[in-house]
Length: 358
Image (cartoon, rainbow, N blue to C red; front, side, top):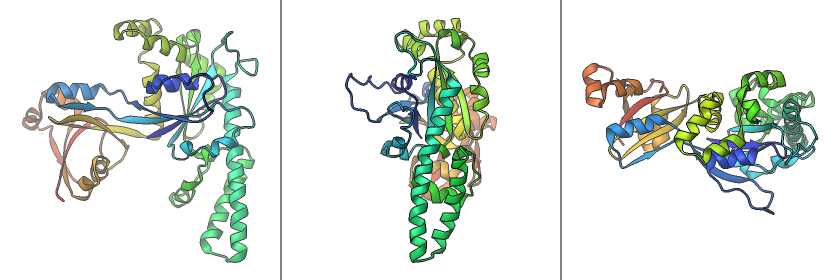
């Protein structure tokens, strides 16, 4: 999975990027360009499996994050030209919801709902430019040779133009699977799912739920294919320097059930409908990411195309059942280990061994 981190200037998105991925801070005078780094998806189940199988290595699922330079009003069009953003699956919009005398808000006041709407409009205007340019080209093509594909595409782009001119993001437009495929190469950013991350100060993170409602962000996130979570990047940075025990005590004091960084990744998975299945053995214990509803052969393909091509069946046990039994052999005796065929939909936490022949 690939996620693009966006935000207005001084929202804290680069700090979040560094905390998620462990990337070093950009030095003073660094070029204004996108940075890419990988975050490992925390999954205690991999560690628990390792206790049973004692593998040579343990491997977590990963998310590739792209940190985009801060956007100012009127600069949204530049985002479309960033190659690093074209292939992202989701946008992570970091919205400033904290005060700082050392780094005051560029607009003079902190208003997260205003900032969320500003960047949304920037994405819409950037897409409108892309759509208008494509329509001009299609009109020229149709005048030369009236191909059915060009006519169908023009009708689709005229619908998109109408939505964008009404200042509606394309993620709110109903599209058929064929239309989604037609648009895949156009990097239309307002059509991508968006996770809004409210970057709060210490006071705000203590009462995050009520703050999100009062600020209007909770209402903003009730739109189609939009999700919301709250973090405090400054506090996360403090906790990153502590021992695990001290960091947990700090979180408990703030009544936080989990680290904010884990919350960002979990919220992204939920927004995209992603789950993790697990494989375990003497060589490796590993988590793999697939979309909810993925059938067993396609899940096998996440490991290797040969396994999908030669798929015979999947030997499956739920993670909780394996932990309760203590071994695969004990699961077999209890009847919780089962064989599944091609139509089986993989569940989150399934521990799977694929049988295949090529």
